Every structure is written in C-alpha cells, then in structure tokens.
Image (cartoon, rainbow, N blue to C red):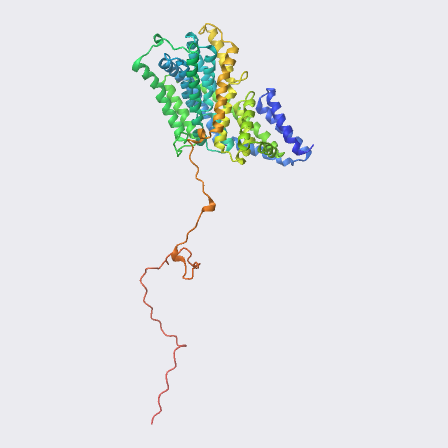
Length: 520
C-alpha cells in the first residue's frame, strides 16, 4: 500500500466509525492512534512524529478562547430555568394571539430573543413547547404547524449570537469571534423573516391552520399587557448589548473592550441578576445550571481532543493535500465547491452533532476555502446556517427528540387532551427544513447578507504605492544628495555663526626674521 492511498481509507473509516453510534470522541481517538501506529510500521513517518501529540493536547487545554464556552453555557442554563421564557411567551402570546397566526409569530419572536441570550437549543425547545403547545392545541392550531414552528424556532439559537457553534467556528478558522457574530446577524434576521412570511402565507391560504385567539383569552389588556412585554424584553436587550457589545459582536460596532471569555463571564453574572429579578435564584437552579455546563463542556473538550488525534495522523499521511486536490478541482470554482460542501454537511448532519462537524470536518475544509479566495468569516457563517438543519432532520434531529419527549410528558400530565403522533412531528419539520435550506442558497448567492455588517477591509495595492522625495533634496544636476536624501536641514541650521577663535602661531611654520642691515 502507498501512503497517498491511505488518506482516503482514513476518511472512509472516519465516516464509518461515526455511523456506528459509539461516542465520537473515543472513536476518533482510537481510529487516529491505530492509523498512526500503522503508518509508523509502514515507515510513512517516524515514531517521534507522534510525540507532538501531548503538546497538541496541552495546546487545546490552554486555549483561552474555548473558556468562553462554559461561561455562555452557564448563562444559557440559568436563563433557561429562571422563568424568562414563560413570561415572554405568555405576554407575547396575548399580544399577538388575536391576529391570525399570532401564536406562531410570538413563538418565532420569542425564539429569536431567547436565542440571543441563552444559546441552548434543548432548553429553548422544551420551555416553549411546555408553554405554547397546550395553548395551540386548545385553540385549534394545526398539529404539524405547531410542532414545526416550535422546533424550528428553537434551532434559531444556533445562528443568533452568542451561539456556541460560532465560537467554535472562529477558533477553528482562526477568525475573530466578534466578526463571526457580526456576520451572523444578517442571516439570523433573514431566517426570522422567512419563518414569519411562511406563517403569514399559511394564514391566507389555510386560515383554519392558524386561527386567531378570541379576545376573551386575554388576561391582560392595554398598558398592563405592554408593561409585561417590556419587562421581559428590556432586561434581555440590556444583557444582549452588554455581552455582545463589549466584544464588538453587534452591527456597526468597530471596537471591542472585552475578550469573548470576559464577555461570557459578564453574561453569566448578568443571567444570575436576571434570575434574581424574576425571584427564581436559588441553590437548586445554580446546581442544575452548573451540572449542565460541566457535562457540555466536558463533551466539547473530549470531542476536540479526539479530533486532534485523528487530524494529526491525517495530516501526517498528507490527508490535507488529498482533500485540497479533490475539492480544488471541482467544476464551477467557488460555487461548485460551496454547493458540494454544503450538500455533504447537510447529509452528515443527519448523524452528527454540530460540535462534531465543527471540530472534525471544518479543519479539513477551511484551508481549501482560503486557497480558493473565500472569506472565512462568510464561509463559517454559511456552514453554521447549514448546521441548523442538524436539529431538524427527521428522524434523527435532536429538536424533534426533545419535542417528542415533552409532548409525551404533557399528555401524561393531562395538559393536552390527545397524544402527539411522531408522524406529525416529523412531517411538520419538513417545511421548516426547506426554509433553512433556502436560507443556505440565499447566503451562497448573496454574500452581502453576511458581509453587510462586517468592517470593510482596507486593501492596499502595493503596485500603486509611490514614494515622493522633497524637491530641495535634489542637486542642480538632478541627482539625489546621498548624504541628505530627505532634504533635512542641518542640526545647526539657523544658529548664530561662532566667532573664530584666536590661536597662537605655530613656531615651526612662522617665517624667519629678516637679517639686520650692515653698518656703513
């Protein structure tokens, strides 16, 4: 066997081992170590090549940027349990409820706001389903629309800053987290508008699917209702501005005063303050939030270690060169590359979590995209839009699993009068997956959706740079005075001339005195 044939075998083994279902972090480590020992035995690289593995591990554990992940996770876990979602959904539902499709609009808007302050899909889908699904079923909303909008609105969290996947993207692509956040705002807002437009069209074509609530369903009216809405929105907006604004992650902000890790720590403290405002801050809340944060952080670190073991060996057998040659020669240039990569990511998301895709696949694709002249911030946001679908794919989407579990709980607790069928959950997700894929196509063919909020890069054409010399540095014959090329005035220019000092004559050079005249 030749070394150039081993990289495709490793890649095929990677796909196979991820489909088995064993934890990816340990599968990757085992595959990488086995392939590394095999490569050493074949003489493709020396044994001391693997000695760099411990250095790589310490490099991962000392990465300051990854410290932002537990902080943002803790912030989301606290806000998930502090009652903010319940208050916002109740007030928004009453505000938009009488409008046709009003409950759908309220779920979409609250999903966007919660996504900007929590960053966790699981908690968001569960909280919104617990509150909104019984209300939607009570007032005759179509079951497939109800389950679809609840799952899709939870996945907006993956795209809206401070998304955890954007932090990972920035780390893997070597770009600023603030730039990633700025680039993600355009597609996130566009996603919300597409969802709202679908609800509006459905309300015109099938009004019985999304009926308006009777005004009798309102428990609040007038300023009391608006006040309850603002009490949920204003603290959330302050927290979003403080966290994202401090790290330069908001549109039209040119400077950052905090690193992502510092901003995450500030967000964690802000979430505790919001929990105290809602009178939900207690030891059980903190314990549950810290437990969830510990589990997710440990999973991320182990996946990253496993992917580093695999990538080290893959690079050693020239796997990166094989990937580059394979993807660089695709027909269609950049567009062909982007279409193939996004189709590959779309189907890979059926089986893999977004963290696994970001840590394993992205390091292989980033160098190729950079060589093709693709802006890596735009490329990272594009893949993040695509990876939203990993939570919505039937039958493996995690958001669908969460919805399945919570609907069973609601039926057992008699909060809904009939069970929710799995077919309704899976079929209901399809239109929303199509809308997410539509957003991927829009971002590919209209890059301005990402770059509109990014700082414009200053490009200097070195071929047009001119150096002009002062005219007084030129000598009469047109040459440059090499002793004074910039025409600077002498240091003593303009000073008063000093009087010449009188010096005693040198006896050796003094003329001899004339001889005396002879006497007559």
